[in-house]
Length: 138
Image (cartoon, rainbow, N blue to C red):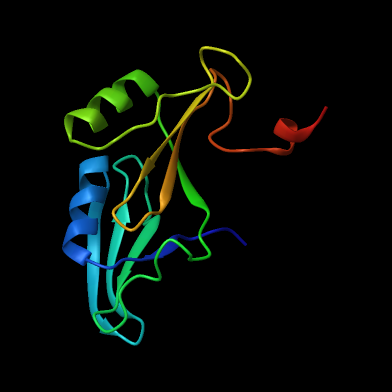
């Protein structure tokens, strides 16, 4: 088994689509009037598959900041370039920090219009594209 995508409830579909496309996501497709709401499928340009599904239910809106989602994570090759690009698109970006004190392993956070946290990671050279068991061994 593997993770397919994350579904995010959003209060305003247009506002959320504008935010995520400014981050760099592309719209892959839309499905209107499902039992859980209108769906917008998004992916990053380098991804083969949809990674986020925005769910907009006109009758109920987003669940607010008290929802069960902690955060989602996307990777970048260059934190400096990503921060500059997001800032140029009027997206507030926290100052990047390094979990291990190095200059090549960096993280930062942005927040979408519904309060969902998005962590951006620049892995050190040679690191796999995601976490592995090796990241948790002493």
